[in-house]
Length: 90
Image (cartoon, rainbow, N blue to C red; front, top):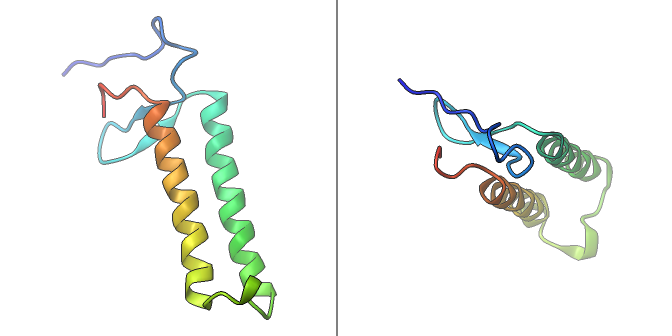
């Protein structure tokens, strides 16, 4: 089994590396960790906001108001992970 390191000539280029087992990526740089923390903070903040307010913003359907922002944030996270990772490993 061969182990490749991303730290050779591309250390500043990649923010994430493919997980060894399973699907997904793992942050390997400061930028990657900030993206992952930002995702968690925004997601948690939105869910807390929905739990605290009585009305959904702009009169949206309550189910859509919960699902759509989570889906958009998750798609953005996956896009950043895909663009800023070593795709040869994933």
